Image (cartoon, rainbow, N blue to C red; front, top):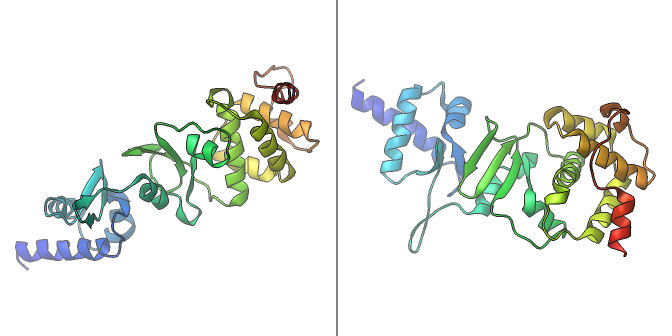
Length: 240
């Protein structure tokens, strides 16, 4: 077969994979090659084909090693929105938003963050930024128990830094969370995302306040004094 024939064959292989994607569906070239195309085309040929498809407008580069099949609107190519990017990395229990997107959804504050932060199992490396979206690797299945645990731990981790925090709303949320607390969910999260001891101590204080039994003591030292907001003080300040 001629070199031109090989190039056309490689182009066809990549196009077939790309055409199965929705417009503005973000993907990582490395991941696409490894998971779907490594047995059909050489890596060098794959990346050359991706480069040509970008030059031809078939693909759009949105970040280093990150591409999408562009969506074309009335006024030209429309880049992926924050919502579309987040959807790719959170659908099918593969991720969740944290940071101010999380705090807003729980009505803990009305402040808006500068970036959208996402925990996801959909990236191969520790962190990646696409536009205004920051992706952080977290290799768990984001079922309801795990999502709930991660939400609470992220809130406790950043509690003193959340601007205009509604303490009464936090206390209501903490009460509801406590009623469904699971040591197993905590253990699974802690294996992949090692929260500081002060956060674990804060969570233990929350659970103790609502009379919920737990096994968090095994992660803490009886000889250490951890710095975190005490629940009794939070209640006093909320209703003062």
